[in-house]
Amino acid sequence: MEELGIKKTLTLSDGREIVYRTSFTDIRPPKGAPLIVFNNGLVCGNAWWYYTIKLFDSMGIHYLMHEYRGHFDGKFQEDKAKVNLQQFSHDLAEILDQIGADKVVMVGHSMGCNVTLNYVLARPEKVLAMALISGTPKAPGEHLFNFKYAHNLLPFLYFDNPIKNVICNKLWKSSPYNALALNLVHRLGTDWERVPYKIIKWYMKDLASIDFQLFVQLIQQMENYNVLEELHKVKIPSLVVGGSKDPMCPLILQKMLHENLKGSEFLVLPQSKHVPQIDNPELVNGRILAMVKRVS
Image (cartoon, rainbow, N blue to C red; front, side, top):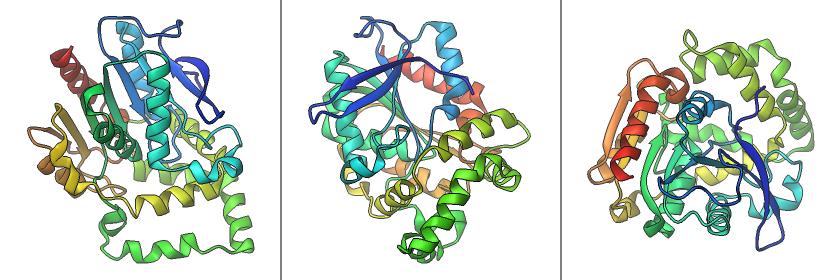
């Protein structure tokens, strides 16, 4: 597992210390070009940004990634009431305010698209442009695995039972060492012929460090999410990216984003699944850089 960016900590207004990573050593980002902000997907670490960060480091492009509260520090139980999409966006706003980042370009993946949208809708004057990868403007459950009844199965996940919770937690924590789990993620989540196995192992190790109940809580929140009626308020340049073979957030959801974000660009990757920036980094990163150049 590799470390991406320079690890930093910051204390938020409610006293919670939070971790974020940047490409720059100072507290404040260098002046000039906009700061690129990466928002992770549900229970994701930074593995999915591997190629993007490597490219940006080589080009001297400045970025920031923040670790959502409750995720990697074992503090989920004390954070539980504030582990939600709105809070993640609020925390990010505090981070950017404290470091003096006035103008940013946001790049969200999966649930990170919802964090991005919440931020943009609340602070439109702060964001120059955004890229939304494998995202959704509404509850994804009814489209999950392209099976219209998939959302009817989710209550079994929410069902709170001590025995079920113990079993799920054990399976969750052992997943980085489970060949079946690793291969399922590799084949269902990525273009497995192009994505190296080491990145899947890295992702799964991060995932297993997160409380299983946090995953359940965020899935429930995603199933209550809907900003379709608010997307017309977004006036910034937008890039929507989707993989045509994505089983988690099928392409129909990215089409909804594109059709409701006026003037947005739409990039469809024919062989990609849920993580196009890992499946086809050259194309996705090229389009992100082109967008950044236009608004710089």
